[in-house]
Length: 275
Length: 267
Image 1: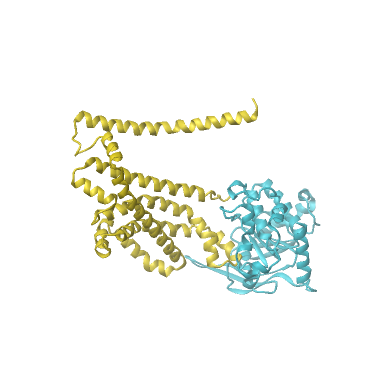
Image 2: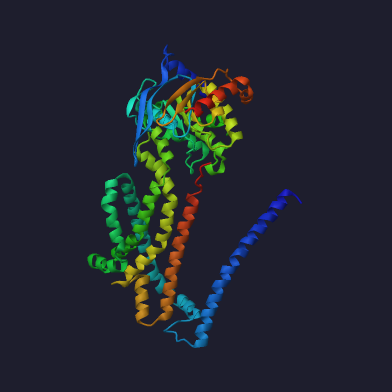
């Protein structure tokens, strides 16, 4: 783990000489349209947002507001019809090929025939050149980091939902990505597990220094994790407001009981209701 | 009592239970054979119409060399047909999954070939390939081919969209997706088809031997029927069934060894 941290640190210092101002992700007037049976649907319209490098931004909005679509557009999983998305100054496609980002899905998406450790190794086995030349973390260290030491050889069906999502996070970190894109990763977990993983994600963020973009439909989760919360409105998906969460890190779960936190979540709820 | 003794006692109980579970089917088989013997004896059925179990057993021991001489070619044909038919089906399924054009062009053809009764294709193949091993292997292969093709195509496509998204984010190539995901997730579908094929390939080999052949279990069945050697006929049929059961069991065993994982539900 220490080695992974050190490697991540050298990577960061090496790759951004004096470019602290360069955003990790910059979205300019992005529009995404889908063709459905009922005709074209505009999922996102003229969305503009900038995610600073090393930042942790959560995206919140009612279902159908296109928050997942925005994340998928950044990950080169859906094409943009208009506007422009830059990931570390590159096109999403180039960033994907260079393994600049990892993606964590709502479902852990583990390969059921592979043990936990082999699932974490998957990114190192595919994807050609980029996977081989990048500085990779040791899969064993990552499993320990997400609290699964001793469960390396367990098959996914032998793990609980929370543990499977931990494996998925370890897998996302194995290539030491500069950006972590997370699409409601804890959405299907019970509240106790979700709280625990929220705290651990903040710890992982502090340890790795990765930029994190986190989609959720939970107001407390969005406020607890994010330095900023990007609130989206629906029909068509567009930016409602970028809310600063002015609370110091490291945050503890108990911080959610503070007046400040309650005020922020109340503001977020009001924004969602007016969408 | 110590924990270790407790667990050995539990294990012994479990083993005993396992044996108890085998008693009813065993009794059923023994009962049916007894019933068969009784009917033959009571009604005085002549041997050339239907032999008694005792006579069949006697023939099996008596004619063991003859039966074995004809058993082995059928085994060879069935196995060769199994490998050939399933192998080609798997390769074509991989082609179909990667090319919609190939799928559209050739799938109807595969269906058409499947609709021709195998018993009607057999004489055609014998005319073309003579009465050696070749037509029998081809017939056994043909009979395996279609179920495996259909199942394998379904299996290769039974990959969750999220798994494909994951592989795309990892910039995985099509061959990598095939090797790392599609082939593995198709295994349960493939083995469902292979278990069918493990019994039908024997049927294919025997049907092939019915038409213009002088060796194999199929030829022996024809010969025994025409000469009213009913004990020999029954012994041959039993042997053919035994071959199917063995191939099926081996396939099921390989499946259990290969697929130790379970699909995980979404949380």
